[in-house]
Length: 525
Image (cartoon, rainbow, N blue to C red; front, side, top):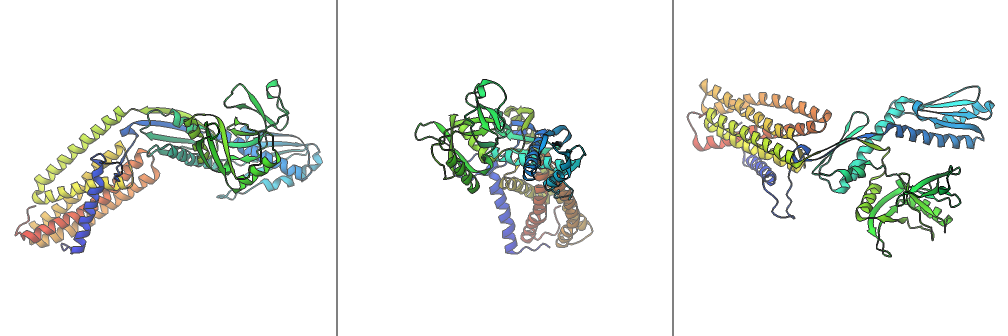
């Protein structure tokens, strides 16, 4: 128990040295930009920054599903040569109502629409039901379970897209978590003015390419012709343009988008690249519509509508307009990250000033220092030399915690600082158990070596059991918690692991080397 081979000793000392080297960067500024100086990131409550609470528009999710379903209904009836009087979506009731011209074809229409029903992947239930009446009215109602899964998927997809967009801006360690069924919490440490980020993550950014209807007059008043939409030009809000409803090329087929300048004019533009499917469609449309205008539409606004001069077959294109460097970069970020499945609404927005963060750091540092000093004094007074061995292990333990968190690029929050202080107490608990056990063994009259052997071995099971249960509890806290709660759980779980190592390995090594060097007749504990 008290024997350490040369290899084992080397490994323990190497781990301690590595922990110190990884933890030191948190105490000093980087000496040079090229030095790999990994530190713990400070959270919103310590560094200051912005907090946004966003809500996914679930009505838009339902409307998109109904619109897609209506297109499927039209195609199915057209294929079956079945004509209808009206086709209406009723989003408030999650259904589509279809009225046929000939009620005698109701059964044929229902049979044609059945292939539109799909099965839910987890429950195996149909995603909608079809009902019919003898008067030729057919109702397609979406299943609540399928809608719930679709809404949940929209939130998860929104979180991933928001993360991509924010990562592109260079914000360090943003915290993006789900809250409830339809809300998303975004915390941006170090971002004092969140307006640009808010605009960036709030845009749906659904880009489409559509042909312009050059025969329609959108500024003459009246409703648009069938199959057209009157959309506003982005750089000229008072002017509208008629574009076809049919989407010729979807922005989902983009693989890359980068801001740049035009060689001809020097103006800022966005250069984009399609995948193979988008490149083929773009080439076919441009080849068939030379000398006609092709509109680039972003979130129901026309960015530009250039005239196609020649077929574009390389899968590459360029978006020009009244761009500034920031707006061109923002658009490129949006297109690279992808479109949101539904619009986002800012429910709450607040900023945490760096002064408040500095005050929190100062208060946390004072509490850590005070706790550390009291713990060291307690161990030194009550356990003498063995207490100072425990104190040395405690210092190493603190560096190991900081080193591992730096290596993981973890975020330190105010609850995390409380977790470090709690870790110090837990580390001392193990050494208290060991020292008390050694003291008891010595009182029973055992020789020093046997007292050490029994003290460490018999305290081990208690130390392991208590730390194992605490470790599992905090793992569950990390899995089911969110935000600062997870930061607290990470700090504690790392601290438990390092405490076990320092109490069981490092302290035992120090005591073993001291015993070999001194061979005392009585243990100073």
